[in-house]
Length: 301
Image 1: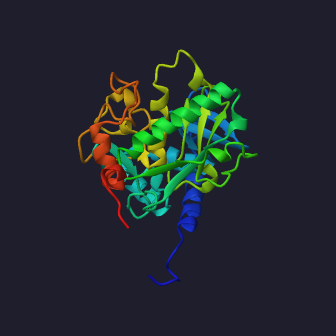
Image 2: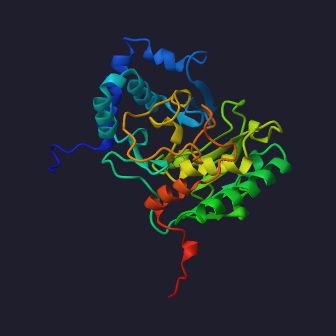
């Protein structure tokens, strides 16, 4: 493709964003999604305000415009999907992977971490309101990362020596884990592989430590790490009960069977599991992206 007709994803995105803002300014769609009482909840993190979709998906202003446009034009699903793809916002496009939904990029390819990359992380101790909470998340992260590592060919590495790092930056790791006061807007939240480095953090709200929490706490982190690996919510699929489909982010038809017990499925419509355990279909789907667990091999040099 010649340089005079080739456009970067960022250029296309800016043009698309301008178009969407123009369209939305003449309707009540944007207000519907930004109205805290009738639409999405707000949360401010590190000076940036996000709106929460699907319970734990954080959208900034530009991402919200694409999200709102998709919801407002469900009768024009093909046009919306093409616009999202051309804008390079693949995290709003979906591809089914037997019990999992994978993030795609602007070209329709599945997004994943580079082969052989260790996903390093630390748990920022200074952000936790007590040593007990810090130790709980530290131990539960170890268990959740181990569960994914024995499921598919992905490696996590906990760099505990960096837990005392000052500030809130990534402190020499791919992502950080920290407590945040989201006032119960979500239990925990994470990111996708193609999110910018500044968004690479697993956030844990104080509600995670509530004794009445009905979800398995390790399971909550397994679910969030599923997002870190590039997997979307299972319950947004067309095969899910209507009560679970309040936040559809795409018009794709599921290509494989729906997994109501998936670790990526919310507890809704009588489906889902409070354990948020990794199922056999989760294993099959994640191995399509990352291959089998390294634990199945003996490596020689």
